[in-house]
Length: 77
Image 1 (tube, rainbow, N blue to C red):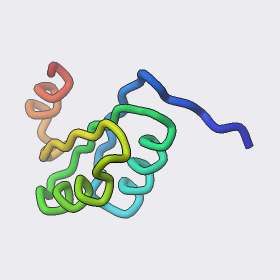
Image 2: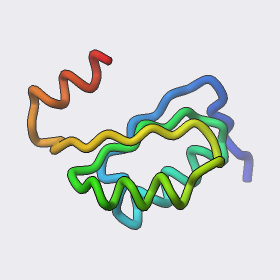
Image 3: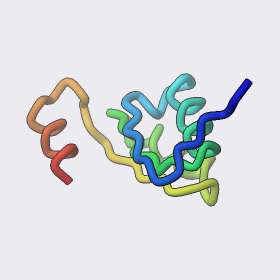
């Protein structure tokens, strides 16, 4: 299987604090992406940052993805 390389790409992962989100974060970091992890749970994001420390550029934002105003604000950053 050919690996996709994501060097110089940014990926926003909603629900990053859950099991599936964590796996997507891991794969994205391994592929070289800059990851912006979003979740409504700050403790889940804190644990995610700890698990993936030093694996690549990872930023975490607490956000309720259902809040359209907050979502727009994140995309404008």
